[in-house]
Length: 164
Image (cartoon, rainbow, N blue to C red; front, side):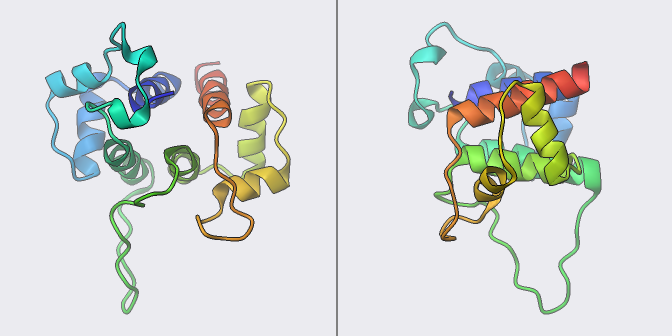
């Protein structure tokens, strides 16, 4: 699954209109036009053969900025507390599927039980321990990289949950 596919599936699951996508990207500190959003959301016939690294239209940073904008849209902008170090804008080399799960959980105000329910709606059984490992910070001893199967199932479960 490439980043364009992730963005298309997330947009469909949450029923986000093109104009709202532009606003969400702006909240995430990325200026895009309506035409650029439509290009990002257009699946080319040869997109199925692309890996994440080859997908130049939507890179990991683009997905993360969109998710940051979604968090701000749904929950509001969080001001840093005095003395707290500023967080890095992008997570760097962390798996984009793990970032997708974490930031979607934050934006949609999902509890761990809600997340398990989303996976169940997609027909995938995930234990609390497995979910906890997927949501851990990279480098933690129990961190587990989220594969495309889990990410695809999560987005499918969100679709069932939000579009019923």
